[in-house]
Length: 232
Image 1 (cartoon, rainbow, N blue to C red):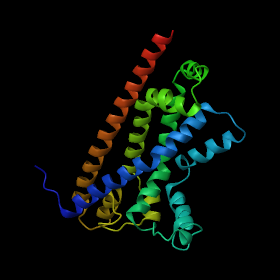
Image 2 (image 1 turned 90 degrees about the horizontal axis):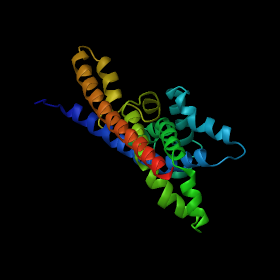
Image 3 (image 1 turned 90 degrees about the vertical axis):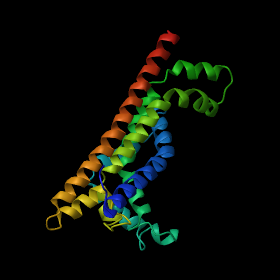
Image 4 (image 1 turned 180 degrees about the vertical axis):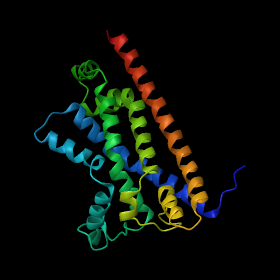
């Protein structure tokens, strides 16, 4: 049995707390943006797609700095919120959510685009509203893929470093997630053993969540294959 130190328990617990917060934070915007990009054509769609996916290519440190400018105590938005986000675990959730959102949107978009439009069109001809069709037809059929995307965002947040350390800092017990704990251990004399332990914990959590995401994605593909056979 592995005996965990207080620092290790804190880093693991905070990583799971932040990742869980990210999963909740990206759920609604991920579904709405994924549906919008999968089912609607509109002027400026390319710009929206570029903005949504920008965190995938922008250096995470830049993302964290922009969040600091916007949500810091003297930021454009932060000074009007009355809530301290920078250098707190909530700030770590925000930073990780911004970086992970594109992955959730891409998965949701793919899941929704795989839903047979003929089912939605049939419901529409029966007098159902677009909102009813979304909740009762599109969402249930796309749900395994959507959940896989949320878990992918969860996994990505477990490895987030640059945006988090810039916006939330590296405060032990407050904002120090596993990647930040690894960094701190490597900056400490004779901290290689501690860094290796943190690395093992991080790999275990990430691989487990990725495995679950892959299982759900494969389930979504099987659901759509069955759906297509029945509708043919």
